[in-house]
Length: 552
Image (cartoon, rainbow, N blue to C red):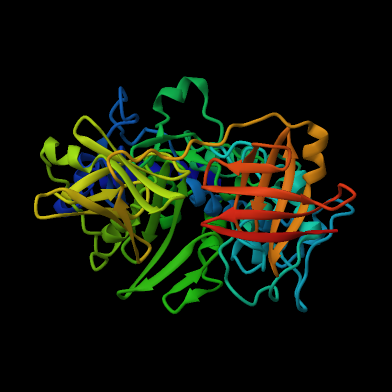
C-alpha cells in the first residue's frame, strides 16, 4: 500500500506546484557565475535551485575549453567528496536493515589477520568513520600512486588493510574531528564487504534507483560520454579520477538535475522508500572543530547567520562541487563546475544571502609591447628560477621543477594565477624596464631578480641507465629527522622517493649513486660504507646538504 500512495502523492505534488513561480537565482549570482566563465576562472558552471515551487537552473560555459558543448543540468560532473554523503546514507540503510549498528567496531568487518589501530578506550566504529572522529589521518601513508594524474585508481583493498595493520593512531578515537578521505573510503569498502556487493552496485540499488537518479553513478556509460565534462584547473586540462578501494570518499559522478532531485528527497519535497534513512543521516552528531560547524553522518551543518545549512562540497583535480539545503525554507542548492576553483560561496549565498561572494577580479588588456618586456628569466637563487614566456596576448610563468601555468593581468604590472592562489607583480625602473618579479603566495612575498639578457639556465642532468639490482639496493627508509623519513621504493624499474607528508616522486639516475628530481630542483646521493652497503642518502637542495641515515 505504501508504493501506490507514494506515486499518487508525487502526481499531486507536481500538479500543485505548476501554478507557482519557480525559485529564482538573483541577478548578482548570475553575474558572478557569468564573470567566472568570462574570466576563464571556470570552464563551465551549472547552478540549480529547488524549493516547494519547483526547480530552476542557470548554466554558463562549456564541457570543454575547445570544441565542447554548452553545460546544462544534464551535464555529468565529478562530485568528489559529496560522495561521502551517499556513503553515509548507505551506512544508515544498513543500520535500518539490521545488518549493522552505528557503534559496531570495524574490527568485526575486516578480513582475518587485519589489525585495527587503537588509542584510548574506544575502538574505531562505523559511526566515527562517518563523523571524521576515528583518529585516522586524512590520507594513508602508503598512498603511492603509479599515475599522479589519476592517483586513487590503484589504491586497492590490500593496500588499505596493510595500512590499517601498521598504522599507529595519534589520539584517542572520538576525541577530535579530523576530516579524513581515508576514513570514509574505508567505510564504503566495509559496507561493500558487509553486503557482499560492490560499492557501485550498492549506490545504484539502494540510492540511485529508489530516488530515480538515472545519472548518479561511478562508471559513465559509453552512450553518456559526450555529456561528461572535461576537468580543468586554471585552464589546464586534468584527467578524470577513478577509484578502487576508497571509492566511498569521492568516486561518484552526477548531474545538476539528479543532485536537485536528491536534495528534494532530503528536504521532504518528494518521498520514497528510504525517507527515514535520509533523515537519519541528517541529525547532527558532534562538533566539527568550530563553534558554528557540526557534523552529521556525511553531512556538515553550518549554524551561522541564524541559519542551519546541511551541506557538503567536493573537489577533484578538475572539478568542484557544492550541494546544501535549508529545511526551514525547504530550499536546496547545487553548484557544479568543471574546474578546481572553489565555488562554495555561490551555494552558500543562495541558501543565506548574508554569506558573501568572493571578490571577482576582472582582467584587463595589457599592451603586447609591455608583455614582451616581461618575457625572460627571474632568479631567487641559482637553483630557483622563474621563467616568463608569452604566447599571443597571454603570459605564462614556470617555476623551477614545475609546469608552466598561464597568468592573467589585473593591472599592467600585476598578474593572477588561476591554478593556485598566487600573484606575480613586476617591478620596473623609470624607463619601464622590468627589474624583478615578486611572487605573492600563501602570505609570503618572494622577490625574483631579473636575470641578465644573456642568462642561460644550467643544463639539466643527463639521465643514465642503472641496473635494477643496484636500484633495489637503495630501497628502504632513511631518517632525516624525528618523524621525517625518506621512503625509497622501486616500481617497474623506476626509483620512487617519498618524504613524510608528501606524495611519492620519481628520481632519475645521473650516475650509479646520484639521482635528480624533475619536479623540484634537488638531487640525492646514496652513501655506501666500505663493504658496499647503502647506509644513508644526502639531499642536496637550496645550497644545503642534509644527510638521512638508513633505518634498519
